[in-house]
Amino acid sequence: MKTIMSVSLVKYAFLLLLALVINQSLAQEVIKLPSQPKSFVVDSQDNLIAHLYGGIIVKITPTGKMTYVSEDIQKGFNRAPYPKCEAMAIDKNDNIYITDGSIIWKMSLDGKIAHYAGIPFDYTVKDGTLKTAKFGSIEFMKADGDGNIYVGERDASNKDNLGDFYLIRKISAAGDVTTILNTRENPQFKSNWIAGIAIDMDQNVYLSDGAGRCIKRLSPDGKVTVMAGLCGKRQFHPFYITGDISKAELMSPEDIVIDKKGEIIFSDGRLHRIIKIADKKVTTIAGNGVIQPNNVNMGGRAKEGYKDGPALTALFNFPLGCALTIDSNQNIYVIDGGNDCIRKLTPAGIVSTVAKR
Image (cartoon, rainbow, N blue to C red):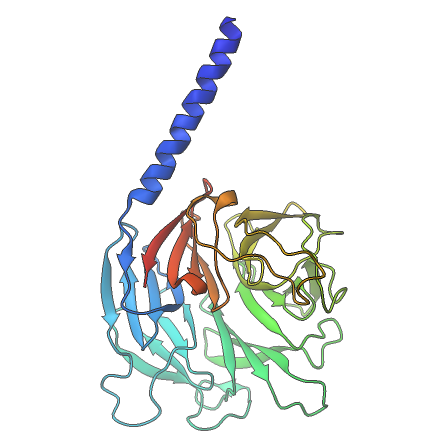
């Protein structure tokens, strides 16, 4: 009898502690955003630096205070080109980089913006120095810990009638721009849709192959490794299968972050889930929308929703965009595009809303 009572007391204490953690996580007041969040990064002090619709850049502290970095990134520019933010990255010195696709701008945390790379009104692609290199259509930017910036750039020339392809280009800390991957020319990585990128501490580049429904790693020596997903197995009517990476199937992998352990964490834009690849297994770590039967939707889909709380009962809605970033405490932040908000997933497995339109 005493043993049963002891087990019950331990269980009760655990549930009480869990409820306390949830309540504390949800208790922080939700910040009111002036417009929809589009992209974000985390600085060295764990502040979120977020770009909002309309050229607004805000800073959100870990304690939930919001201030403006810039109320209009085009203010002070009297003629074109004007700064725009279609993608965002931050380096180890808290310099922020934004791009409109062909030009990269450098912004300090006090809101000062200057031209960094790219030739105005020239949309061709050319490697070289910061002064001579050219960019055409940058869709992703990420920085590593050594001051290098990596960009994912769409090649929409369709010169071989095979559709779009992608270039992964590296801007070194010394200011040299080189192309490290061309998906049209690399037989190990034939893809015409890259949906997200990330960089680890060893300068491995992780790529969401949206067309192949898998995650691949590009090492500095050019080797391509499939990390999870059965690349190219299903063009339509995909399955989501967790478990061992040799059998696991992905649906629509998008933005990626790498945690301190080297684990791969990514969002799935059609499943409205946050998924992890670790220990040679694929697992869901947040999101629980009901997945439609395989024959109902040719692209695969789960039901959207909005619910905070324990991660495996939380609901997300990503169709208008999703981005991930991670802080030094391993909190994962999510731009939940369909709900116009920024959500936080803690290491303890609690989802809360940080800021909302």
